[in-house]
Image (tube, rainbow, N blue to C red):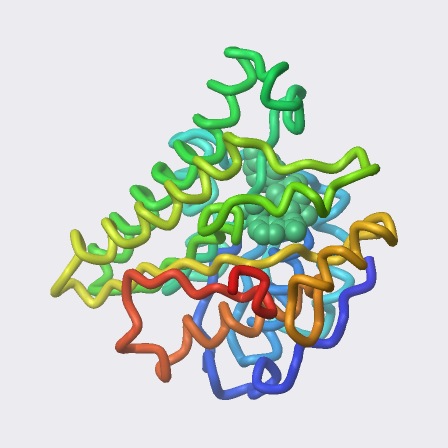
Length: 266
Ligand SMILES: NC(=O)c1ccc[n+]([C@@H]2O[C@H](COP(=O)([O-])OP(=O)(O)OC[C@H]3O[C@@H](n4cnc5c(N)ncnc54)[C@H](O)[C@@H]3O)[C@@H](O)[C@H]2O)c1
């Protein structure tokens, strides 16, 4: 795996100063970039993912930085608790968490007319239910420890309707349940932030635009035309924002959804 250099700001080794950050989906595009950015900012990434081989590759990228890797299935409460227990056993504490796991059913990506009840239920449970259960487990831990930071990863698709013309002539699309899940993730972040007031807990959300991943040229051109300076993003663009939200400089930011999209939603 090759990971791009984080933008300036994410490489300040004092920003996170030893904070232990549990990153779910830590071997994915956004998760792995976040793990690297956390390490470069002086934090200790605790990288949790379902995919052991991908975790090994992230470990190679993190060689030389303190970190831990945890194989975990984070769709349900038992797996999430086992992951937290493993993180605590390995690192001795967890002060922050980023939920970037992205489980998808076999039916993910079906067009609206073909959406099956079974796959819909599975994706709503794994992605939105999983985000709630991850929050429940981590916030219970943070409350017991006197505080902590939780970051959810939503999407521009939870903020605005898709620009369907971008997908013309490609096999790509943007599922209706994805919009519902991501709008839900933004809503639960607000809810959780307010629910945990006076406990030293912050819950924030980032809504990234699309991440570069060998998409067709026509799609990239149409997407770029609706942005301001960049178009599709690198995982590191999102990771830098997450590091900021985890830092002391963001201590007054709570319950917010920070859109990182080069102006796609404008
Ligand atoms: N890629 C984009 O363009 C984009 C844009 C906006 C928002 N997002 C959001 O960012 C988040 C991360 O997306 P990504 O692009 O990094 O995805 P990705 O597919 O690259 O990574 C997701 C990771 O989650 C892991 N995972 C899947 N099921 C799991 C499970 N049951 N338990 C533990 N780990 C599991 C996978 O192994 C993978 O490493 C998602 O919530 C996604 O909706 C992505």
